[in-house]
Length: 226
Image (cartoon, rainbow, N blue to C red; front, side):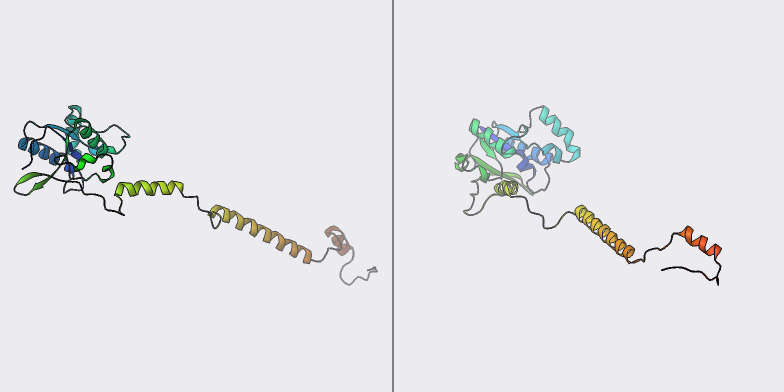
């Protein structure tokens, strides 16, 4: 049996997505009400991440906004380090509260060692035909040689930023098109010059030739020098 708690911080985003791909405000409400019924007198602070309101069903968004306005739900400030998880643990650390979540918070183990203290982490799951069941738990430790998904994402992002720009092996398509056009034009100019040089030079201009033909019809004898 779980001992009574004075204050519990609920990881709302975690419980709202338990067994689901998208968060459900209805499921979160059921979990919180069930916990408060089982542990009356416990102060409860429900924290959701900053994107929670955009991910719940559209039909629940008005209810979500109302809960935020009434301080029934709390979201971290924009740009909070560690996002929703970090905010949950910061609050719990400040007031020495327990945390209701099925997350192990592996990236925060070094910072919040009290996560491994008895009674500081509680898990909860909805059981068919029973309802929500809550139990004390210990976080799953990060195995040696393995990194959390968050750590891997940060490392991958850092490597991508630090990696040098690749050297292109060929010019871009536009450059290739320009180079091809220039080469084709140069070839045409050379071909034209060669054709022009191959033609025999003209001995007389057209006017002189026509005057000669007019004055000397076919069969006329004429003297000339070559």
